[in-house]
Image (cartoon, rainbow, N blue to C red; front, side):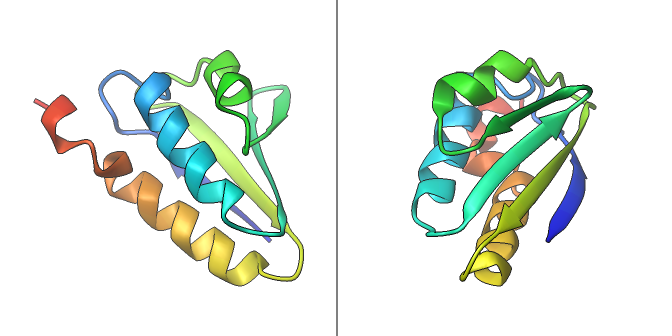
Length: 91
């Protein structure tokens, strides 16, 4: 399963959003990957996510494959759409 999303956090996919995404992805048994431009990384690694350099307005794809893929994709998409629950950084 996969979903393409726009990063709306003003700093893009930097440290704190990457940490939140990696923590959320790690809760699931399924493999979770993020694709940005020509790079594809394991979303359970903060450093991998940061290395993508996804800017604000950047389009990335979350790809989930495994036994709990439906729940994983739902939760990860929701987290991204909520700007990683980092409202204090949105101003």
